Image 1 (cartoon, rainbow, N blue to C red):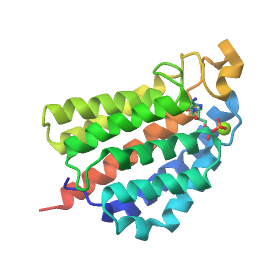
Image 2: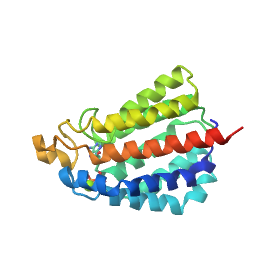
Image 3: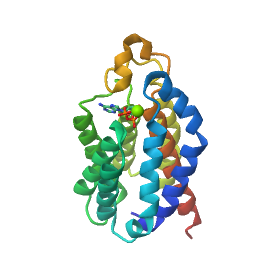
Image 4: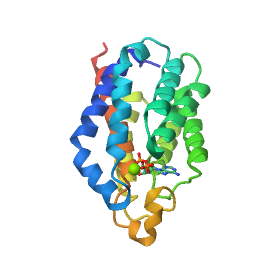
Length: 214
Ligand code: ADP
Ligand code: MG
């Protein structure tokens, strides 16, 4: 893959910046149908990752993903911490030492399956999976078609954003929002929103770094 773990510190910084820029908006969503701590949980995890970023950047991708998963597991509370920890630990297990884009697409698909199992959730339940599932599908489609990476990186953020937006009218059947029943409709799921924001930050950072290469 033309993307190495040396980019990790920049990726984390860009994710932190986008979450900070949208913190109030996401907290409002989370206060409407959750307990309002989602941004805090994420920021706590991101700070832990930023502190370890140089060590993570020095390892091959699978080791880097394992370390990210373990850190999230130990540092982040809430459903989202356990789910992202599961995602990264599964990624580490499923990817070869030097993954090609197609390997990453396959491993990401398996990792999203692991998150589904962990959360006992499927598509359409108004969670972060409603962003991860379509993004995994798009990745696989493009990898199978051997589409150019810049094209893929440009297409994922609007898809993730639209997928988060689509949670607005869903009925929450998992997590705290499910306690509200029908009253959970009408608000975007906070976890879906931050998943879309983080995925967009990753794609934009990767695009810019690919562009910088000769
Ligand atoms: P908590 O719900 O424990 O307070 P967070 O506030 O950090 O944890 O995260 C809430 C987000 O986690 C929700 O917005 C939703 O996207 C996601 N989520 C909650 N429960 C599940 C689940 N069972 N499966 C998948 N995602 C879930
Ligand atoms: Mg919460």
